Length: 172
Image (cartoon, rainbow, N blue to C red):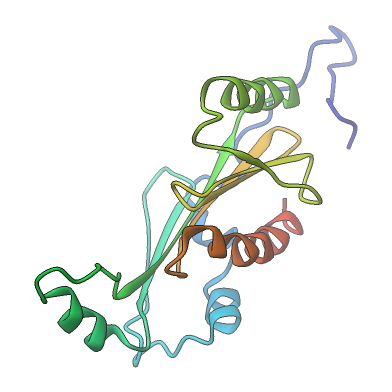
């Protein structure tokens, strides 16, 4: 596909529908998530939820030391450590490549304090937010949003988010 498909009669960009509507948990499959993170569905209380008429998938599972974390979190003055892992995947379809590019440019301009890091080697463009542990990846008219909280240090989630993005990009 070219950078921007155009109508042969009008020359206008062809508007693409979001192919992932109602299929948010297919962008990255449960099997891929289970394998990548070594999750045992029962032991780790794995759960995947999507939203109707959205391209959204929320997955949660317990950390191996979740009981110890919960106990520690109840201690006065203790640093809070999340007992659960959270992976949110959402696919935005902006209709045209131009609109998706403009959205990315706007993020860089207006939300650079949030999306502070450019990420190379993924899709047509990518941004990382350590503050929200979120990776945004643009490929043509689509933007993949991966929010991942596994590591206790937010930036440490970037490498795993990139691995997830590569799985999704192969399908986009």
